[in-house]
Length: 114
Image (tube, rainbow, N blue to C red; front, side, top):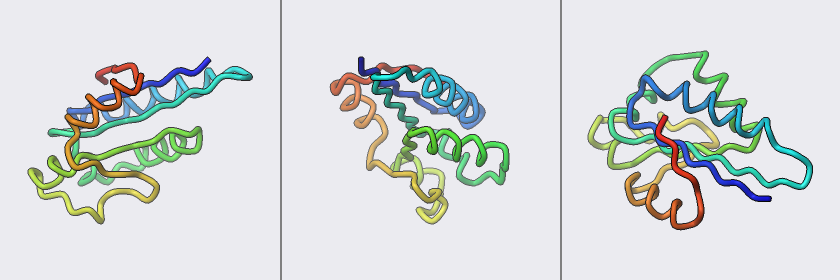
């Protein structure tokens, strides 16, 4: 079985919650299963890149170690004056978060707003 989870984070206060949900989801992997988890951060959520939060950093690292992917919206980065250098190593950007949300759902990802 293959399951695809898409966690949407438009609010910075929900970033760690999304990472926890992703971690919990990926930890349920059974033999023979393929689990994919993506976090998409856009809108005001992008301000997490301006915060110095070691707890969020640890959760991000664990999520990624388990195979999770994190994407940040370039439009939101521009709107909130977040430089690309703030994107953590191993994370990705997308030009428009809203388009990525739609495209990934077309690819079979299940949408959950964090």
